[in-house]
Length: 250
Image 1 (cartoon, rainbow, N blue to C red):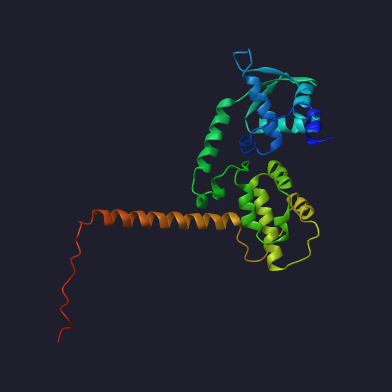
Image 2: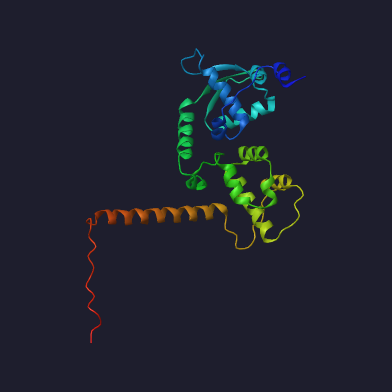
């Protein structure tokens, strides 16, 4: 059986929007939110509430009951949806389009910044995964933890938050760089470290603090450059007057 035949027998595709994954925290939540947003277009309730059949959502998206419940919980926690009158088979749901719009606007603003400014994690919300893989590569560098699968990282970020994942990876990478030890399974090491405290090496300064310092220095340098430019712009054109050279006093 060729690829076309396989796809023909695989049912209807379940599409999702990658940018929704960036604001919700995972592909699973993005799949559910994409499905709910499509439903808003045909809703008849003026207050925005729609009744969704859980088995229908599972069939349309391919999500398991556990994945669907987890996605619902995450979307509710972020304020993207509200629920009422939930039963074992259906739930009344309303999408908070305004909050999603604001979040998408923040993502657009971040994406429009110069590449050197994209790593400002200190000001990013805890649940954001936009730019996270670039930050993680910046943290772990040439250590075994740079080989952790992106899908695994995405799940961890959705569960624990971007800052905790990066902080944990940073400590693991710092430990490895200060005293290299065999790491047979980096994913397993990260999994265990996320659910318990990991000890940083001596003189450890977190990636978040280093990043704050780096960005503060860059901001200060930019302001100084702007001041110099402003002073130079006020200088009269062709003003190259120099003090006379009077030599040394006898």
